[in-house]
Length: 395
Ligand code: GLA
Picture 1 (spheres, protein in one colour):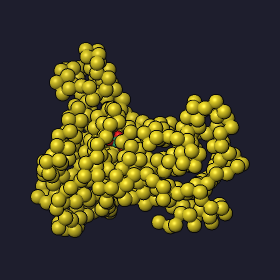
Picture 2 (picture 1 turned 135 degrees about the vertical axis):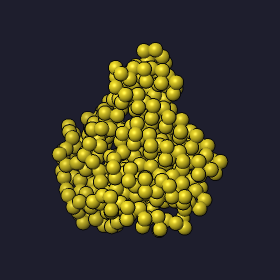
Picture 3 (picture 1 turned 180 degrees about the vertical axis):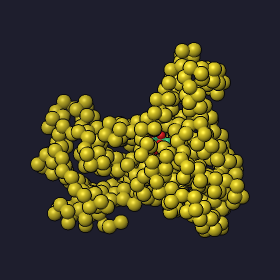
Picture 4 (picture 1 turned 180 degrees about the horizontal axis):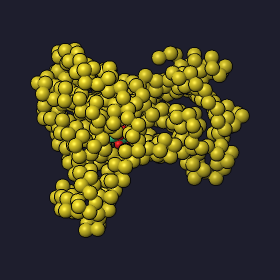
């Protein structure tokens, strides 16, 4: 990446007052559990977004995306979703911050934020790969605004506000995992996050003679965000049925496997087997994450990896968020003795698989998978070898 302070100076003819860096994330296990108040096991990575920012006085927000060479200017008041996709990840956050200020103080109308700012951004997180590049932008922006305007937001508040921004300005009803991981990541540690209480614990990730490798399908099917929102609704439909008999069930986190079998399997003819399959996957996965963490703590990477394969099976067959390309990548390694685990990662319908591969075999396995992928699809495999890194911070 370029020196973003130099780019800022050239673009806006003034100095940046602040540079913030926010990482992408991987997730070892716990997929589509976050919006069901379940557990996830993500970590921030050494691929990131950087923003440079400084105040203006004329009421305009000037934005420039260095990687795309695109500039957009909008007024700093009455912010609405914008036709240019990336712009929404900035102004959506501004809208949340303005809402927060309006609720928090009486003289909100005079708050400096309405005077606007200059911002430029760049990053090296592959877009559409399921590594949460959009959350990284949102987290970098809110962290920078918080610092520059001395808003006093906690990183917990920032996570919730950026999630809301994604709902309102990107139209994806995402869970909290991506933002939380980007803001709270620690070097060499994975985080077990309880998405219900937001309590989290860090564990060192010691994979011994194994390492994480990401295989990137290099595709993102168009239905990703609409199907994502549909999955959320299907889970809520399941909860509604469960609640009639068990009023204490507020989310799938509160439901047992037995309850899901009892009520959703028998109702399957009325509601369709889909809702049963979705809920069964989620309840299984919430349990699986907790067991997988025990494996990790016991140093049993083989058992951990096996659970990753089980997760993929569930995501592909029951939750139906995988796709042909992702399945090809997982099948390519499934029976390989030096690959302990593999599964699709993130929302699905494209993006990456996450694999645990014996260090000494990484190169050979990459070559093998690349061949299979080229033979069976029209795409070229891309490989990312990431390190676990620190969360959002000032540069
Ligand atoms: C996307 C969402 C997350 C999470 C994952 C699936 O990355 O942004 O909130 O739901 O999909 O686990």
